[in-house]
Image (cartoon, rainbow, N blue to C red):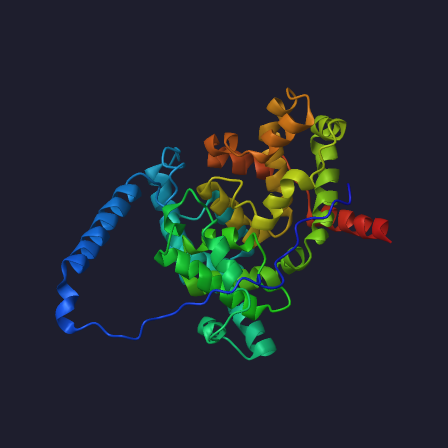
Length: 371
């Protein structure tokens, strides 16, 4: 791997200062219904109509580009799965770990994710840890400050989050939710603060669950699933690059040769995969499938997903014969947006059967090489 410097996290807010001056003069009561006010109300009404029209041109999560994606669902199978998950959620503590794993691999029904994710992530332990470390066990505790160090940068990034999604355009309910969750997370883990990339992962979560659940799931990801390191110091991603490079050599040796022939290092196109946990690389429904498997099975899911993406790109990649075209194709996700979710998940889980021990061995080998 080249030692090219990766984009660093935002560790302090930009120096831009915005000063707002307000006119303290109050308007007389009779002026509230002036023609200008009526025009404003009419504009708001028109905007609401426009927003409603936009909703009709998006998928259930607000994405314009994903509205025509076909998701094959057998109604009878789906209804049976809903009933099984309802029963399992009601008595989750009594469930067998293998059963949870098997059912999560098959997919959690959309409407039950809001109940299942907090259980899979075990946010109860996240609250206990937060209470022990910071004496705070409520999401609202982290939003009591008047000023937040990273708020300016967070708000800038919110407007760049999923530009194809109407839920994060302008000042919507979800965009404000995104701001609040990221502010709270930066307070909960102050040595990490806020880092670019977290906005996409957070946005993907709040499209399914509420702000509080999203916050605690993220807190659990950072503290229990050890995701904090890559946000504190993106150079730590070289560990992931090293592990993935070795796995590509094993499972896709021809692709490995092509990458090396064209001097395409993994950090050029997989950095975004790891930083956003694939929330920007995969269609949202497929991302949710991968994410909930990750909650149950941990880090190896990340490498399995990366290898599955390589699998679906391999054939066309072999036809490209230079650095620019090869890199552009690897960074694109259009071909992934037409995959069948079940096909992708089945391939990910059956073709790439390696244990946590393999990841640990490669991790130890990487650390040894760094000495």
